[in-house]
Image (cartoon, rainbow, N blue to C red):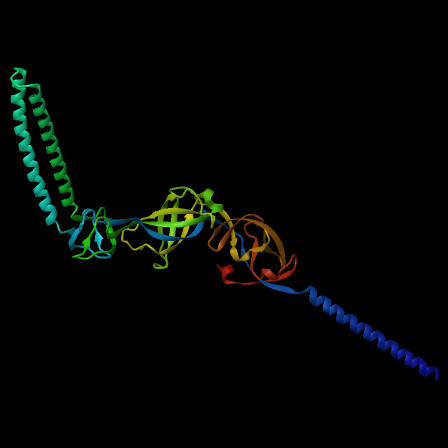
Length: 368
C-alpha cells in the first residue's frame, strides 16, 4: 500500500513539473514574439539641394487694360468695323456716326464767323474815322464812346463765332470712333443703324499683352514681397508649359476676411496665348538660390504646434522634433532637427514610436 501511494505522488510530481515547464516555455515564446515585432517602413535620405525660396499661390489672369469706349455725341451709327475678338491697332476706325447734321453745323458756323469778321472790319473803319474826328473835337464824347462800345461788341461776336465753330468741328470729329491703343475687342454692344446718345457704351476693349496676373499672398509671407520679383505660372490650358512675369504692384492693405495681400505681376503675352479669366498656379520667387536641407512632405507628423519625423538608425526608429522653413512643391525645408544623409521615414511612420524595430522596404522614391 505504501508503494502505491509513493508511486502516485511521484507521478503527480512529474506531471506538475512538466506542466510548469510547458507554461514557462509558452510564456517565453510569447515574450520573444512581442520583443521581435517589426514595422515595415519606407525611407528617403535627407538631401541638400540648391533651391530658390518661393511662395505658392493661386491666381487669375486679367487684361492689362480694360477700356470702355462710349459715344461722345448722339446720332445714328452708319458703320461698325469690328466684332468680338477683332485685333485692332491704335488709331483704327471702330465705328462712325452719321455726320450730315454735324457737317451742316460746321458750314453754318463758318458762315456766321465770316459775317462777324466783316462786321468787325467795318466797325474798325468807323472807329478809326471817329477817333480822328474826336481828336479834332469834331464829334462828341458820346459819339466816340458809342463807336468804342460797338467795336468791343463786334470783337466779342467774332470770338463767340470762332468758339461755336470750334465746338462744331470737334463734334464732327467725334462722329468717328477710333481705338485709343492696340488691343482686342472684348465686346461689341451696338450695330449699324442704332441710335446712340452721349455716354452710351459702344465697345469694351482689352489689352492682353502684357497680361496681368493677380494673386493673394498669406499674411505670414507679406514681409518677403518686393516689386520686380520673378513669378512663374502654369495654367491647365497648356500642360507642362511655364510662363514668367515680374511683380509690378503690391497692394497697400490686407483683405480683412482672408488675411491675405493682393499682388499683381505683368506677364509677357506676345501671341495672346494666355487668356483673361484663366486660373494660374503661381510660384513667386523671393530670393536667390541657396543650399537647402529638404525632406518629403509626406514624412511630417503634426502634434499640436510641434512637427516631428522618424529617422532610421540601424534597425531602430528614432523620433526627432524638427523646425521647418519654406515648402518646395513636394519637399519641405528643415531648418533644424535632421542632417544630410540620415534616412527619414516617409511611409509607415504613423505606427512608430521611439526605439521600435523597423524593416526598411524599397520604394520608387528611394530609388530616385
